Length: 120
Image (cartoon, rainbow, N blue to C red; front, side, top):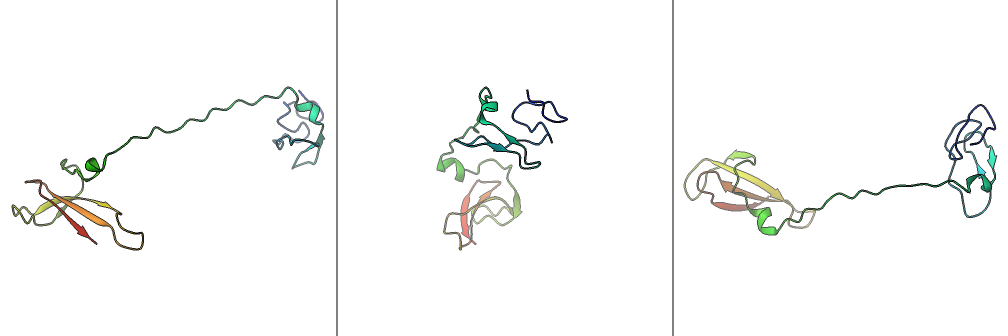
């Protein structure tokens, strides 16, 4: 604990102004960015940092599952199915071509599950 000013703090914070100190370099002194107080590197000998990196879990989706629109839970639009004549089809979009071209729309009939694509 350092007591140089009005603050009582660990060596990670400035004892004079309370702001966080920059990281200790390989050599040289530590200078507070706010009040310009200077600390000797020996003040940081017993300082330890522990940190944990948490990665998000990645789920692998096969290409067949991306294009499989059997569940009618997706958005539904008024579009006539060319196979059964139903006027409602669900859709999903993917960017399959280059970025300066339009997306590909996959339509699925909510009645007979007929699938068709459209390049927009």
